[in-house]
Length: 149
Figure 1: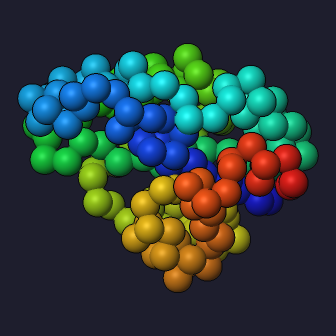
Figure 2: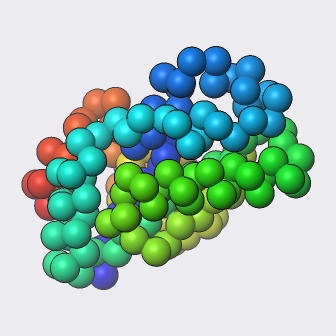
């Protein structure tokens, strides 16, 4: 069974487009994770993910928490990210991994044979070294790639 994973921040969620996102994160304010706009067409993305799931693909999310955060803030970020996914991407699947900042994504799930959409170069290279396929959404439109599958 083929698996597809999506990063959130900078890949499907425009965290970096939220005004004052960095000062808010440093102040342990989870608001930017809740109010970030989607970076893809919501309807098209959900339809394509739904079609792929019916074809036997498993779809999930692997996303880092905020850097250098307290236990309480990690909990708040997890809640905000889950809320965002439920609101915008219900077709993303039930496999949602919200992990410590910097955790190698291939250590969370088996990368071999799986696809990772991630804007972070290091994550992509590491994923490929572990047998997966990396797609950089800054170079290829997510919806076009999904449609071609």
